[in-house]
Image 1: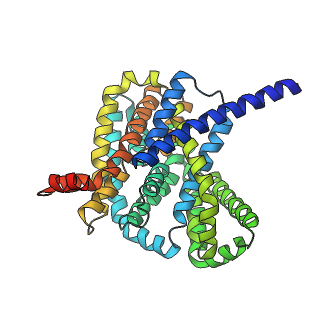
Image 2 (image 1 turned 30 degrees about the vertical axis):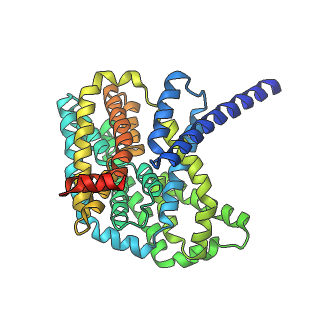
Length: 395
């Protein structure tokens, strides 16, 4: 028994070590070329998943991935105050309505065209509606755009989408199994109440939270911060709200010296866990399921790229064209929520083609989104009079 446990531990360390080295190579290439590391992590996951997928425990992979997303949103929340978020949410309602109106119908329509009925259309509509908070947060950070003028509005849209998921997920879950409407409505109400309570705490009593976490010792501070982060994430996840939303709101609540120190201490962990999230997400995509839905998948990718870019462009009205295009292209990537929604359909024995179509959409947009965001400024300049000459000079 001891020998078997030792062998299992050796295999675990070897596989995790291999994955981490592969990710390190991707990060080196990203640092050398100036690109976001996300597409490289995704490609590495696809290649390794097809050739020799790591035989890691599903619970371990899920936990690592969830922690990565929570840390991504937490560190992004540290950059903003509760007052800034409140102002952004108030001003972002119009953009949120545009987001829903533009991005839900394409998935809904294609779901009907694929013959999946009203329930399938509702599921696919949710998949095309919600962007990936994790990918967007990583891209904004990688490209040094946290302080850009479009970023607060971009975050407002992401938070509104995540809050919409608090209502959508219980309701679509009921639609898939066909029972318990009152239970779903009650669950959604509790979810919104918990999020509202955390946000109110961040807005009114953020200084108390900061004082409770603060300590001169780095060891005490990082343990206190991570303990609070995991508890808040667990609470929000328990009431069917994304744990990432809880992490983001806790980041908003921390301010002053504690936020500055926490940012430095948590950042390396964020990079490690986030890289593993993107890698394992790509490993989990079964490429064999994609060919039958490749044509509608490509169509959905193209439509999503256009309408998500239009969403960001409209939401960032009043800013310069570069900022508006950066906002739009940043929203292109779909990710964790789209896979969660597809997973609900799979667990309900729905047509497996829907999950394959969702995987195609996520894979395509997760690769194209960061690249489009990287070149957004150059694209705007090329479209302006004399832009080609300017772009060449910048090179």
